[in-house]
Length: 113
Length: 114
Image (cartoon, rainbow over all chains, first blue to last red):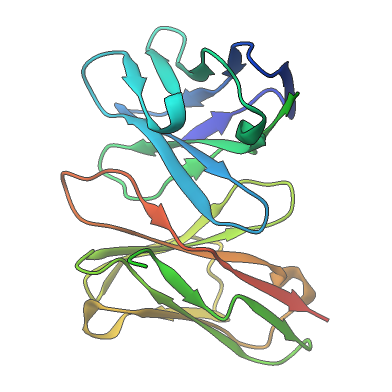
């Protein structure tokens, strides 16, 4: 069965500093990996995805993520955090041959001025 | 706005009543998904349509839940005989097909069962 773990409930970072939000996954076959962001009272917004190819993928708003097959991880990163990045971030995995996304429990990112 | 839309945005109902939610996907997206999100959790998959065919259903979708997508356009999710445990955010998403893997989500319908 597919699963996603986001080990940190909350990540605190000062504005201008780099940020990392961690994600590990478990699937039987090849994974399709995604990051979404959720602002209060809003739906999920797609940030980026890994399907195949280069392990470093770039997405919206300056975010990027690194796929590491040996560590089964897909950590979200940004070189310089903004206060406006404060939100709830979800990692999700989709297994080849299936359509459903399996989400982690989310990590709240708090960027302080 | 060409995004996924959901109606209503909020619904308060009494236990035992039936409720129906509507989702309008992004135009020409042939794949449509329903998820449920409770407080402090990530979204959980409920069901998936490709055009009008319902191809995947979660075990979470009990007999009280039914979803339809007539003519492969909008979709409805009905919950019969609501229970307090049904209180959640119900999210709809759509995607365009084989070469597009990401799903685009609507704003959700927040259901409160009293």
